Image 1 (cartoon, rainbow, N blue to C red):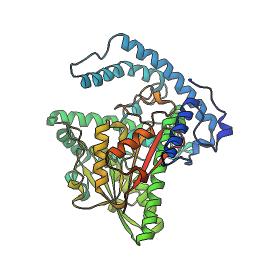
Image 2: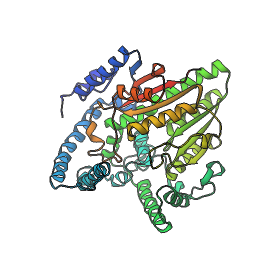
Image 3: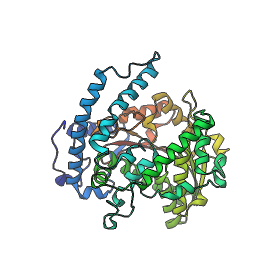
Image 4: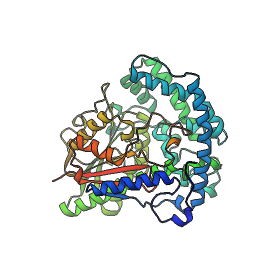
Length: 444
């Protein structure tokens, strides 16, 4: 490891993990500098069962750090072999080079981590919304189907075999009436311009991998990693920060305006769990009704979100739109094609920005901001450049596509250049230091 460890037991109730002192110092400096520039910037203190076991957080950190050291050697060997020197276009060449190197070292990931821990089926879901369900539900996963160790029998958590029989309802626009298989084929043909035979083959392969994932039991080490690694802590903390910020905002608006209905959108929604949690909480505890627009180009993510909504009694609260999020030039979808003149109380895309180049980031920010009504809130996030254990996500985890980590200052500057008045932006670094969250209320 790059730095010695703090004694986590002595820091249980303090900010940041203390696992990477250099990263912690940089993050604290980022927050202090944002405050000096007049921003409301803080470090979160979200609750997570993992913090009751600081020794586990430390041991998983050391375990994964050691594996990343071994993988770095294999990456260096792949580079020495000249993998990825492909293409003429410099942007395309860079992407193909990274993909070639990643393919070369992927068998070593399986050999070192995923194979021994019986987690290859999870690894095959990398980059997808379904993979995140394992992390969000980690504390409730059974180890080897032992009911004394959790609630969910397999690594897919709340996602089960019902997904294969799912048929989209009348609230799903272009997907209405389609089975999941039909929707996947349609998505391949619409968004990837595949012919029907290729689209059918890709859909079948994806459903086969999904079935293996849903059936896969959880090993002890896999559960430990999904409970205690820094990325898992960050994903769950991001969920809590988004949920708390939006819930508090809507409660305030409900009291100020005597309003009992709100319109929210999750752009690139994935399984939409944080937003579904908000809708259910407001509905059950305060009788506040919300309409949640789920926008994604992945039919599987939308089917999963819809099933989760049904399980939570929210089938009538969601509206599904399967659309290409960005065109071939990187420009985001014109949201009015979905909103049809409506304005949003909440625009959320907290898990998307780190995949976007700066220009596309600004375009999306501007589009979301313009779709907000006065008094609405936009919530975004980005993996922080100074996060701890930064190499893990593209190292041993092998996440794809590539993540663009940004400092707080870089994130705020992109908002400002998109026309967002950042003096109204509240910045929150998640307790683990992995994510920077941005919450901006539109002036009334």
